[in-house]
Image (cartoon, rainbow, N blue to C red; front, side, top):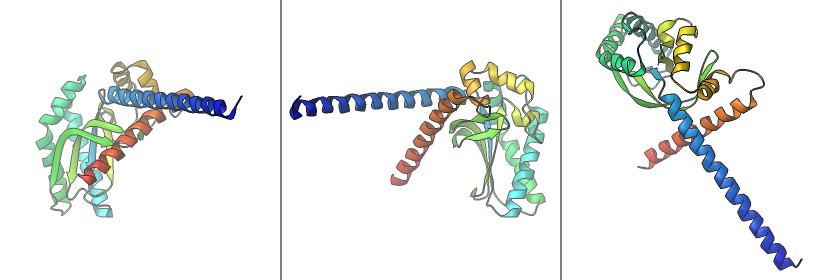
Length: 226
């Protein structure tokens, strides 16, 4: 075979490999995006952001967490669907702000409190043997003061932190509710990451995580540019 023909064959191989890699990348992006969206549709989270990382601000953040969860545990509608839980949380935003403000005053602080319900970006987070991939989730976000300190995260639907605020133990009722709200494959994706010999699950989870982290970094980049 002449060098010219060898060059043509090599060029065809390169183009074929490029096309295959591009298809694999597109498939991963679609899989990661669709899977994370499906998982997010089954979850509502709680996000408390401390004023700063000072010891006092971090301590009061946890006191506010305990007070909010104590209030929610008393009022949370038993057996609620995600939509019903979301409505309850939205209707209780003013009470949540009031509780947080009271705790701040009790601790000699005058920081402002802002509680909102919306869609916010989250990093990958592990709760016992349950791991949620990075991505955008509906959440109650409570900002304390300048909201520049470390965060505290939990799951409000299914009511993980409502069921056991002290240890965040995954009780059977909460896990059953989570399982009923999503596909079997997505449930396995969240609950079998910590197990052994789950290479397939790990690879799928990491694809979702990589895609969502990349999307968040791009969003931050565009935000800084514009």
